[in-house]
View 1 (cartoon, rainbow, N blue to C red):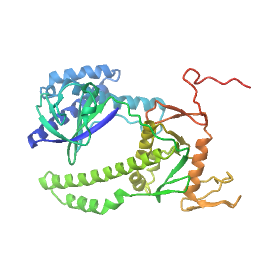
View 2 (view 1 turned 45 degrees about the vertical axis):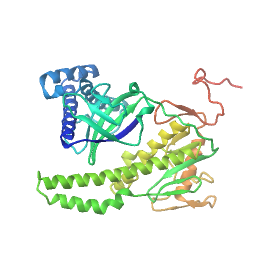
View 3 (view 1 turned 90 degrees about the horizontal axis):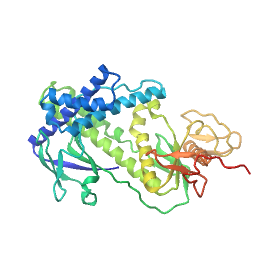
View 4 (view 1 turned 135 degrees about the horizontal axis):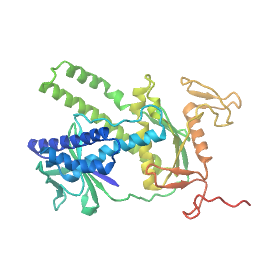
Length: 400
């Protein structure tokens, strides 16, 4: 599934109509969550049928396209099913009980195959539901002429601090070819450097939030002095949201470019299977870890691995920093110790470089194990020039 995005250009009156559609979609989603709370034995089909009841009960809810109401019900069921899955898996801590969406500076409404129409040149889009938002001009770099209209499965209108955007979900599998490099790499992410690989190369940590922290604090302080509910406060709130949006875009752009570079230059990429959600509980490093966005980087590495056919391996992080990559003995060290000095073999190396070598070694030892990438569909086998076919997959090899 490909997602293309374009910015919408219209009048303030049209933007107000989109706001009404977004608020209605949020109302339908919250109503479905409340309906499930009152009737725990219902499923996704009952929630979808409940959308018609809401349309009859509230006249303004009927203005939203019927498929858009169903998409909002699907969002509610997605939160409910995730809560059920977490309970079945017995995940420690909170299980993600469904919550109600509140009024925010951002929001979205999702259409399926009706309620919208593209122009012939595919540079404008018209929304034809009961809100009558009208025609918007789209600004973007993606050309929709390469795809048929039946391939567009969803159209999502997203409101952000700097305007309104239209996302097209296209049913198309992205596969690209690349020349094999015959090179494998292990990556150890950190805070001093964004990552250090098994060859000793490092990438600097950009620290986007830290660099913008001064201006963010200044805007936050000026907004706190304004009167609640005033236009001046709303303006400062929008400026603050724009600044945060810029930081998140910088972080995403860095993650995409770095992940693509890593995947394109290696045939196997190994990294630690870190539980970042648990790591940010440390109040001393929470902001720095969140600013580094290790999870986002890993997701893009796994995505590009699917696109270019590269193997990715997530290894357990246990003792990757403590073990010596030369002799394998345990050398205990604290977080402040940045150099690895082995008392057993005398090997001296940078702490992160030593960990990256251990990560790669662990990945290469998993030869024959199934590796699942971000899509959850591709099975890769290591250490085999010819992977087993689907007919023989899972069968034991006869003993010699």
